[in-house]
Length: 239
Image (tube, rainbow, N blue to C red):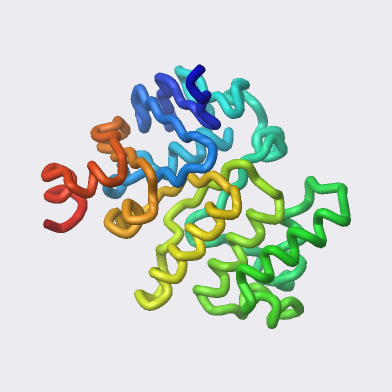
């Protein structure tokens, strides 16, 4: 029997008022994958993540997570089922310490022992955060704030991690390291759906990709095939 997808969007339409943003979106993510969602500005990438999280309600279609429908559920319940997000522009709590930011990521957790285990895992992934646990989040560099935003999301022990433009605002020297860490998080067992403007870099670590164009899926294939696609190269890879 074929494996069921961890996340499945089927025929999803999303509107902002009367304006259609997503139209007939079909998208699947399987456990253990890195899947990237690509496209130009205003193509609907971030709205797709918001729709999955329940921040925006789909007008039509269904969203299933682990075989159960989640469209229509409040965001808190969706997060509790095992979905976390690293939002665009990080959006950490600048007045809180690094440790307090990480604790906020675990606000639904009740088991102190596993909390401590996951805190150690995050600090092993991001040693710079260990050095700055008592420092206010807003005083960190952009790269360190990105580490904190990822670490905060991981503290909820998600089955699916949504990442919205993880390389945005990072110095070029930090972008490659950021993608190496995304791969390591995936190797440790977290499935990832990533929105990213840097198509070349995203496809280099993803298993599959979807390309959105004006709210519709224009291309969907393996990362390898998308990298080799002449249409993809002309439109998104600068070739």
